[in-house]
Image (cartoon, rainbow, N blue to C red; front, side):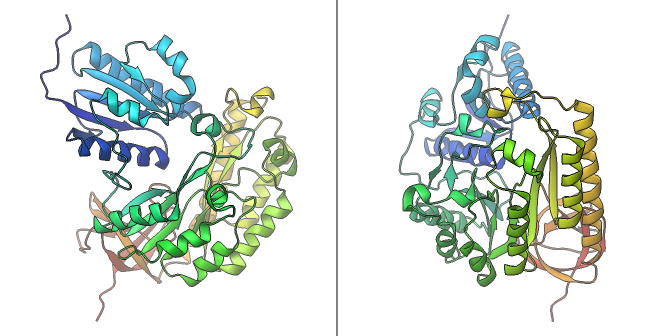
Length: 436
């Protein structure tokens, strides 16, 4: 017989997936806190809200497994209620209701007011920028737009997040000021597509103007750009990056592939020649820029020749940062009508080969940093090391700077000048510089 949990009403928010989901969970928790609800992030609680990811197969599997785990806890009387929100719930709500009926209620990506109501809270419109941040205190994500208007054949994001919708500059500045007041020093700008920012509100690509407004926020020292689409990139952003020291010389620009045949099938609206020129323009405008990209291998119809074209191009471009994923065949996307004809083992082999090439490139680039000094932000202490980052590195996905905590002390959350004394393929080792 099931026994009711004796714990008082504490809401545990569990976040899966990308930084956009992290942001959404933080907004949810900010709303709950404003309603005087006790809320925690991935801790014990008798009411559970799971913010799911529905992007690709692995993420969907993780989300389903997490839902099943908490439903089991509900059956055992360890939690009282389980609510599910986010992308998986938006995309597959009828299926989930049928397959996992013991969830109390499912909500989509734009159902925040209804989710709050189910949790006994009211949606407070006046809480612009009020969030309960879950990242280390020195950085926070700033979501500047929601949704996406791009027609990429492999991507289900428009199904889950809807059309592109930019947030007004004034609202983003106000949100940034509140974050700075809490001690945030680094803003990581996120959206499904940064380069589209402003087209709906201002009838022009307005990322450059947004950056010029954000650099004026007192207390913010680094601003980092994530998820820029290559087609129609607003080149004035590079001028702002070059002229404004607060804008990190860093950009995350997912390129996905480079073979013209694959780019065309992916509906990316560009070619190898155009993409290569864009990257050359980036390097010319901001010579020490770190460029991060992500690639997909094993897309339907990807021949050995297509892959060799991609592989040779990765060697030629020498990206500072690169991630590689195997293609996931997603229902209701344009590419789903194509035959998923590259065997799984071939997909994995190709991904491994790309990452081996990148590992060598990263090692060589890191060796060049030995003996040089960098301004680093210290994120946390882990074991016997303080862990920091240069302006060329984003949290969780890029290189880290490790400082031996048994020999040196640096303050978490502060900027410190670090001299690099050693380097591996994806880590730097450094010592703090004593300033006279």
